[in-house]
Image (tube, rainbow, N blue to C red; front, side, top):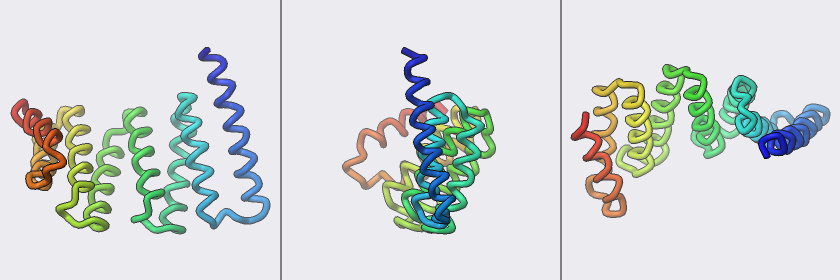
Length: 169
């Protein structure tokens, strides 16, 4: 089964490579479809456990999404999230922290400081920092998340989880 999945991944990667080559041939590398293709190729590399290849494609995709669509666009944000996960897999913790903080800033700018999306970003950052045993810094982001969610009835379960985590820190 694993060998079959690897072959399928390789076949999908070949298809994306053809699309990438076509974009380059017809000089459509400055459209949003090109970095989207690179990002999709990166996801296939991730599924094949080829994290360095994925990282390179995501770095390029991130730069292009920012140039073409802007740093507040969902494709840019999605690319950042996947890139943070790749850095985490590679043990590049400083990069993960830097990216997650960037995501929080963009969400605050886009949605406002007290939006649930900002709280989710703080929660993710706190979770990562706690895993890295940076407990004081993690606590800071859990508290920020909880402060935002304190009046959000729809997020009662997450508030409970954050409260339990804070008790343990």
